Image (cartoon, rainbow, N blue to C red; front, side, top):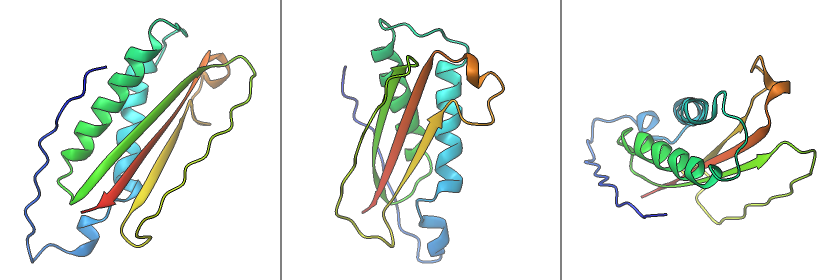
Length: 132
């Protein structure tokens, strides 16, 4: 995997309302959902493709969140696993400002996906926004 440096600039405007600066689920979750659907929709599970899918999903989400022009640092994680019936346990721990920092998770396929029972893989994507 190659690391890419994203140019992320934010100019504070005193007239900007605080609500416009918040890292919120209503803006971020559709980004995660659209990117995952675009990359994984109708794909059969292929172990050889998983690393490329994970990299693509993380890169696209990161770029689209940076385009929101909010004063945040972002972290994106993505796990793709074959739907084999095996369990998965995961944990995240952090020390942050509860009023400004936040995280958003998206599970794919979601409950609304019509062919959810036919999917041969699962994806869990987490986006973290930390106020600058």
